[in-house]
Length: 583
Image 1: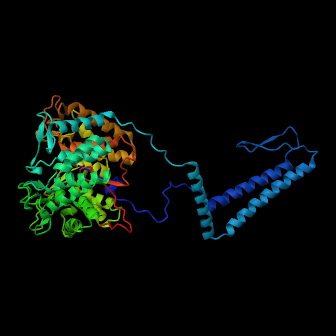
Image 2 (image 1 turned 45 degrees about the vertical axis):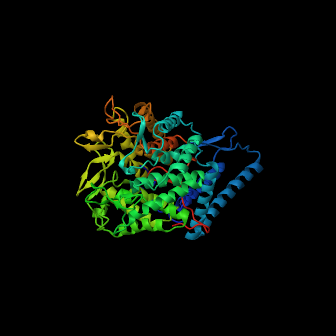
């Protein structure tokens, strides 16, 4: 549900540049010394030949050309009676000859260092001349946003406003509110908070004001409800912080801080690794029963850094920063099998659970936040960058493979062997790693009947980028593939990414749109799909936002200034000065 910034291939590690190295393409500005000397000798011989020609060729006014065997060389017509002009010309040729020889002698007298300095000066001059002639790539022309995307957002929001207002999500077919266990039994208006920044970015100010008013009057975190620390962080704290940074409205910052205080008790474990869930009223935490003997999940406790660092940045309270940095330091001390991070860690013992590594579900956003912590710090958090590079090196070595059909995919490591399966969630990595992942994920869409991607797809037994199990054929309005299209468009401006995004937008509008909003479908390989009757909050927060940005100009939320959390909520890069301390 995410990713930042395209870095180069090979794990997105940035190659180091030598000091003073020019980013300009290399051009050979001058000839080598030996080549210059040979050229001067040839020129001298040629001038001598021309000089001698005046004495040996007949002085005939009809002869205006002579042939060297390779090409005709024009010479001035000389009338024999005009001896003064003839002598003047011979003197000029002799002078040119002497000057050429003198230049060659001077070159040979210079030291190696002087010649190198001279060559470098000439190279610099050539580069400057080229820059003057070529001012660089022209800015892309303005892009008209397809009205379809804006209309899709309006339909999704208006339907929620009418049928599910105040509820966490919407059942668009039943036309009523909906919620899941990640929000407990509370009605926190998840779709309102998640959609706020999308509304603002799209210029839907009336809708944004409606959402702000509901938050001011109704958003309360004192309910006796057990919520997912991870989901509440990325959707609520991330959404509120983004709304604050975009609009400047203090209410959003206040609500984000109030909610963060309710999550802090989740860190009260023997290791400091937080529980997966916490009761907002009592502060009691626990883990999911299915998670490897009560373990915490890598993608959950590893996806708090961006939001918590910004909380400290805004409030000056170091506790948020300290909590997430403790997690990083603990992980740095632990041994990792084959250099890979397992998806499960026991918060009581500090030991890894089941040795299952995935860049998809359970692991995905942990790696994303290592990279984005570095980007968000204005590339000063070298500790995060090193952890990211080390992790990606192991992933490239053990998980990234190419299928028989030439598709690059990211498999899953389970108990010592590679499972040749890739999840939709892992498709976010196309914007993080490149390596052809975007093409593979597009193929997973293109090989279905609905042109929408399945939840997971295999590369085995002759099948490539196709779901096999029925419970992996569904599409729940997920954003990861469109997210990758957007990042790849920003990095390359290759029009195919906009084309692929437009295909996905049309497929969503055709097959997922219902009268009461948008619904996921249960089988993307069926021409008559059934609906799951859920309009996910992340559809408004991520899928439609990434589509909108894909067809917008690059100066809307430029990646040099903003870093998106894993729920597509933009947070500004922290550029620190004397009046602001970064953590």
